[in-house]
Structures are given as C-alpha cells and as structure tokens.
Length: 98
Length: 504
Ligand SMILES: [Zn+2]
Image 1 (cartoon, each protein chain N blue to C red):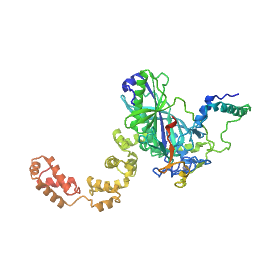
Image 2 (cartoon, rainbow over the protein chains, first blue to last red):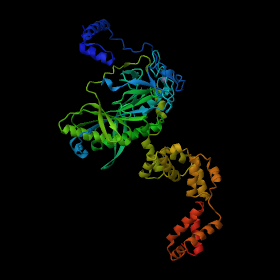
Image 3 (cartoon, each protein chain N blue to C red):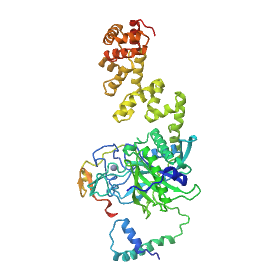
Image 4 (cartoon, rainbow over the protein chains, first blue to last red):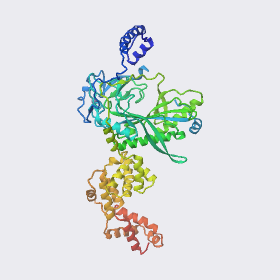
C-alpha cells in the first residue's frame, strides 16, 4: 500500500499548475494511491533478465539534414494566441506567482 | 541592495575558492535542433516558428544531424569521451519562453563526458597551466525571448506583462559543465576567465558557433563556493547567471569570493541560489532561491530515437578536428619569429586566422600583421565591427604591398586605397586609378613644391644649412600636404638636401 500525502498532492498540483482546493487534497491522495497500487502490480513480474526500455522500436541515429524548410506563414503562428502585441505572444505577468 | 564584501586578499587568506563554470553555446547550424526552421538572427518576431518549436499538439521533433555532429566535435576538442549510446530527456517546467512546457535536453546520458581543458595564466611565479576538468557537454535547445513590458524598462520585476518571440526557441545549444575546479587559490578569477576565453577560441576554431558573448551566442554561469581549507568539504555554492563578457567572468568570481567571505566570517550561511550579474554596477543580486530543489521530472524523450554514434564516425570527426588553438599559437609564434606579446596582439585584434590565411597565400608575415593589427584593426574598432567584416582580403593586401615595393604607392596612399576597398569602390588597381592615387615620381612637381615650402618659411633654410637636419621634417611635411600625400617622402628629403647643398 503506497501512501501519498496531502503535501505530495499539493506539490504535484503546483508543478502541473493545477489549482486544487485544500479540502480536495485528501480525495486526490486516495485516488493516486489506488492508481499507484494498480500500476505497482507490474513490479511483481520477474524482470531480472529484462533490460529497461524507453523506446520500443530498435532504431538509433534518426537524423534530419540541416536544410531549412518553410516555417509557418507570418501571422499563422500568432493566429491562435489569446493575445498578441507587436507580432509577439502577449503573456500575463511572469513573476506573479512567486 | 549592495551586500557586505571582504577585501579580496583577506578573503583568499582565509578561504579556499572552488569554481564551477557552465557555458551555453548556441550552434551556428542553418536550422533548429528539432525542426527545419531557419536560425538566421534578426528576423521579424515569430516568423521562424513551426508546430514543432511552438509545441503544438501532435508535432514530432526530427533531430538535426549537424547539431549532433557539432556536439561530438566539441566533446572531442575538449578531450571528452563520446557516449556509445545516449538519449534526450524532457526537462519539465512552465515558463512562457518554453512553449512545449518542457525543454528537450539530456539528463544522465550526455553525449560527451569526462574531459578537460588546459588553460595558461600568468602567476607571480610566471606562466602556469591549470587543468580545468570537464564533467559533460550535452545537447539541448534554446528558449524564446521575453520582452518585459511596464514597470522599470526591460526588467521582469514589476512588469505588467511580457511579449514572447519564439524565433530563438529550439536553436541548438550545447551546455558545457566543468567539475568543481579546485586548487586555483587566488587565481580563481583568472582561471575562470582563461577557461571561457580558451573555450571560445576552441569553439571558434571548430566553426560550430560565432561565440559572440555580447549577442548571447555564448553565455556563462559562474558557480562559486568557499571552504576553509583545501581539505575541508565543499561549501554551499551560489550560481551567478548573465555573466556575458570575459571581463565579467573574472569580476563575478572575484565579487562572489568577497561576498561569500564576508558572510561566512560574519557567521551567516550561504544561501544556495541563483544570482544575477549586473554588468553596469559590477555586482550580483539575489534571484531565485534553490532551497526547495527544482523538480524537473526528467524522463527519456519518447519522440526521439536514441543516438549511438558509431566509433568510425567519432574517429573520422576526431581525425578532422582543427589543430588545438594553443598548439597552433606556439607553432605560429615560432614560424613567424614573433614575440608572445605580438601573438597576443593578433589574438586581441581577432585577426590570427586572417593573418594565417594571408601568409599561407604567400604574403610576408610581418606585412600581414602590420595591416591586420594596424590600419584594419583601427578602422574596425572605430566602426565597432570585426576586422573580418571589413571585407578586405589578403589578395588585395598583397596587391597593395606589391605596389608599395614597386614604389607606386606609399603608406599614406596605401591607406587611402584601403579606405576605397572598405567603401566598396572596387579592386586595388581600379581604386588607384579611380582616385588618382600614385606616387609622384617626376621630380619637377616635387621641386616646385619644395621651393614653395621654403619660400613660405625662409628661416628654415638657414636652420637646415646650419646642420639641424631634423628641421627638414616640416618642409617634407609641407610638400606631402601640397601633393596630397602622393610624394615619396624619402625622395622629397633627398631633393631638399640637394637643393640646399647639404649632405646627410
Ligand atoms: Zn520550428
């Protein structure tokens, strides 16, 4: 049985920039516990002879040549931005949260 | 607010400094690391962006071969091992200049590791070599550029909002990290500066980057800690960012030594934090605290295949590395029969490559040095550009030299030819013809000018005749002026003495 603490949930929520109310931390802690327990079943398999794997396809050195290709048309990049100023993405104050 | 500092000598008498340097170098590839967007500097904001470097959903990265090749070459030039197999990793954090919300970087599998760079510095006991151990060089990507609006100009603090340009996001970066550099004693600032300088020289020699610190294509973070004695365990370090000139590297180390020493002596502890260097005031200020360790949740990048450089590839790249700059300097100093100081002048003027190219094309080393460190360096300095950017080739300099030795040009006229070359008036011969620059070889006009000069200053005749030959200088000067520099000064002098019946 893993035991995710309220503090860990709050920390994860902060890293992911998700607002979770204090009274919900317990609720999510329990859910995360259940998920981790379910995934932990994998560790019951004997993997002593199985190398760790991050990429299922056995390929290496997949390169692109250093030749420029067309970028997005001017304006297209900014078209979906919530706010634009001077051909730049306008974002809220950065240091607000610190 | 300025913090308390201890005098440097006193600080060094009481503590042993340990350095660490992190250098980010922006590669000069044509395209970004993971997409084909152009990297040309100075484009309109957000015109060199695509779904990959904007982090749009579903976009997949594709790795730039030259980015990897450059990383391997840098590793080899820094005496590193090259990984036989390594991966990229995602470094997760939220910041508006990072549109994917992670930076594609390398974590515990850098492409190059365990190297060193030897640097020479002057000590009280003469020149000494320090070995700077290199922990790793890894590949990653640059971020976008923020403009902070409102509040104090350009500062993030107090800004109302920010504007982001992602043209730079995704440009290949190589981060080169040293191990703790120990044993420098009081020379820590000099070693730090010499390291960055030597590194820059190597990178320039490799042709992988334009390494312009002032434009941010080479950026340096300085880590520093103090301990009581070389045997004590490492102290807490501060990390000073934004150290963007060689002079600042030296100053920042010195400053941190003095600041740490003052704190430690006062019984305060050193906070592990990021500090910002201020070029204008020469101090650093506290930035982000690293008290709660950053939690980047690195994991292997699933969208990029591992890199397994074959040993054949690595050896081929090694075999084609340029000569080590320090070795090359020693060789050229001997070949050109010049002093260390003269070599240093070539380095400072940034013209070593140009002189070498000129000499290997057959130009006399002294003549090449004279032009590149003299007139060309002066003009470049005046205009705030590199000598190279003046666009004067050694072919043209050789032609000027040839005309001088034929007696068709003198130094003064040669400088005018140079002005013409820089102004783009054509090649040497057409400038000579076009500007009507030629040494007056006919004595007639010279004698006329001499007579005019003597008539204007009759007293000088007696002075020279009385044996004060130095007085001839003013007459020669007047003649040169009258002929707009087109006379051969030595011939004028000869003619003058002939006329006055004086022998030298
Ligand atoms: Zn792109």
